[in-house]
Amino acid sequence: KQQMLSWVNRFNICCFLDNHQYGSQHNSVECLAAAGAVEWFSPQQSILARLQERYAENRDWLFGHLSYDLKNALAPLRSEHPDPIGFPDIGLFRPETVLQLQDGRLTISSLTQDPEAVFQDILSCTITAEKKGSRTVRIHPRITKEAYIRTIESIRKHIQRGDCYELNFCQEFYAESTQVDPLTVYRRLTELSPNPFSCFYKLEDKYLLCASPERYLQKKGNRLLSQPIKGTFQRNLLDTAADEALKQALHQSEKDRSENVMVVDLVRNDLSQVCKEGSVQVDELFGIYSFPQVHQMISTVSGELKENTGLAEILQASFPMGSMTGAPKRRVMELIEQYESTRRGIYSGAVGYISPDNDFDFNVVIRSILYNASQQYLSYLVGGGITFYSEPEKEYEECLLKATAIKKVLETLPDH
Image 1 (spheres, rainbow, N blue to C red):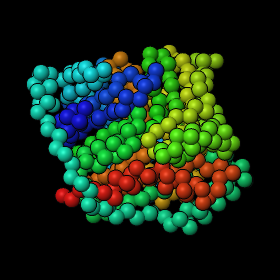
Image 2: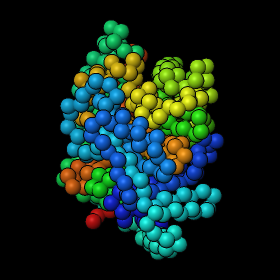
Image 3: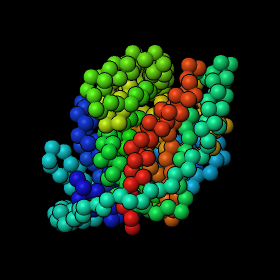
Image 4: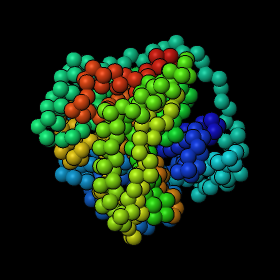
């Protein structure tokens, strides 16, 4: 797997998706990677119409991303904040080579090279032992803790007035004039936090180093499936009984249940726009799943897709994902623009793939480090769902908790 990652990183465009062997009936392949681009799709105008067209004619693999700011093409919305990372609103590429790893078996398909030669090339990639960390990336908060708390109070007033029920508010932490090796950072991040929707995504000089636990949307045949996360508790890895107690406390938490059920209702409503009447169901409500740093409350919603429904229609109904916006979606996206100070860009968007038979699987881009090598700009965003019952101080602490692994990685990088 590490040799595969090193090999795809040789290309200007690549995408490496790894579920870290999390057992789930919904996971199709353990590790899926794409390298090189024979075609690049990133329209600036008439995005939805062109996407619908491209999806309808697709007969090959497509990998890539949907930026959060794709919302501006889905609804009459705007984003005025700066975006130093610079991923386009949408980017999909048809890869030269696709690697699929499952149960110790590697399948290689390539449009430009002999698969046997690719295999030998991958085997020749040597993984050198990484140096011990001695360098810290100096991270700055985009807003102060005091400003964050004031903002949460303002959002709670909007909720009190009935403008919205829940709003996902995010803040940015960043570093300028910073040089890092993205591959080393990604390896360390996923070592600390090996989550089921991890991704190393490279687009020329732009990198997404992602350790996401959350699925946005999967299509298998005519079945759509979404798994929103709302509810985060820290783990106690030193005491099994205390860790189990935290798990139970999360399951019983009224605040987290109310947040979770709100987003489940939102997802049900989204899917019902493109699914057959009466087919949308909640497969699991308030499921508690344990990851290396945290326990999460995850629900699963699915539905049967109406015939002849394209990707653009599905995105029009469901993107951006409810867990990263709040409800009602249109109004909270306006408020997010008003209160946040950084354009989200690829953060809280999605990365994934479309298969040759037009099935797809996309994650939610959270727990991620964003890096623009040309600008030497590094950034990560963290957020949480704000409801009327949110306590600003606790929400701030939850943000820091979600960024624990990222902070650890950036505090101990090897010298160049």
